[in-house]
Length: 109
Image (cartoon, rainbow, N blue to C red; front, side):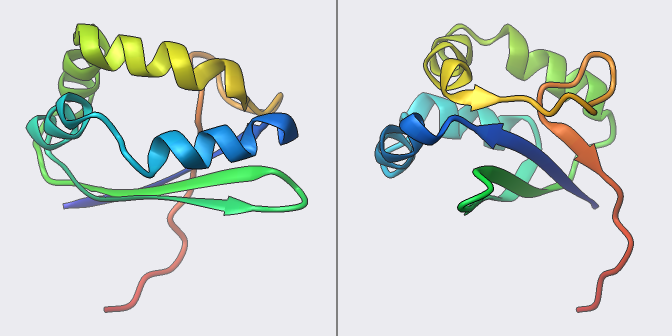
């Protein structure tokens, strides 16, 4: 199992709508997350900085393949088309990232 944390900005005017849609994520999107070996997926919001922090646990053996599978899913693409205009990627993210990956520096069970 691999723990993953990511950070992303959110446009202040979109916060209410972002919370609303994430209170009822489409079942097809949730099913694809599970099919891609992602568990314990959580998104946190930090205001007033307007940052989203995501945490999840990857239980598969090929994250790149599972990420590609998710990205190719039409329903996930539809969901992302709604979410992405609300988001504000960090300027410091790496090439190819939307959510900026974070380093795992500490964990205790």
